[in-house]
Length: 391
Image (cartoon, rainbow, N blue to C red; front, side, top):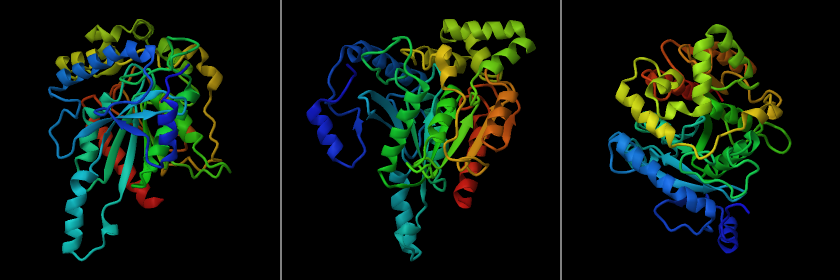
């Protein structure tokens, strides 16, 4: 039996049109399950570790900013409780914008339209990886008009798992993860606050983002779903990572074997040298690498995907008839110093989505944490601004 809300609570929530988000500071009415009890201690450890690593006393963003992030919980259609982080700029700037409009004799409708960015992490990571820099960058700017959301995939970070799995070592299929994303976006849409919603996927989270985006169509297949655009960061291509692994083996056999072993044994969770080789450039400070290493080590209760069965769900098929493709819809970014997703893989992804591949020199796999994260964020902001104005 999967982890579910009690029948009375679930019925109550389903009769309401509000978003099914539960504050982590309130008493949860979910049915306590054995798996939830088993993971509660690990969630607490993750929270304490994030506070310690970020230098703060709470789970909010580590940077001192005019708006702070909050933790929420989202219940999926099959009853799994997912942990989410969100940071809204509207609560900070809306009043100031309203006052400015009144002074300029403008209507409230002329305030800055807010865009929602829904961040999706990759394997062995969790939503914390976006809170480090990206939340402040996108939500701390008055004129940006962006709210940020990030979810922990099932079995990752502070999110739960179904009580019954075919393989307890694997959190879910790509289809199930993509369904979670579409459900989460639908509930964000129910807030009726956002003109545009973009999914932002990193690594295998990018592959899941592609699945969710490609199948985000109305029942008639018109392509006008809840997701307006997609940003892919060092994403696994729509055909999977098989060909990339072969290329790396031909290019640098020894390094490829080391990285392959690191992922099999999760060596990068305890060895800072391995962590750097897999995720970070040489410019990232050693203390930062160790900080991220500890967070990575504690970010997964089960593997995100079963790579042995993944090919059964590939390649990604665009169900919108091409309406989801093009440079106004999709942005693809990668790093030239990435030893997990190579430049050819980035170009393959861009070609599939009929857009340009942006490759940044000196950038490693964890593009949102590496020293050139701001270059990535700037390109993302340019895309959002251009995409919103051209659609």
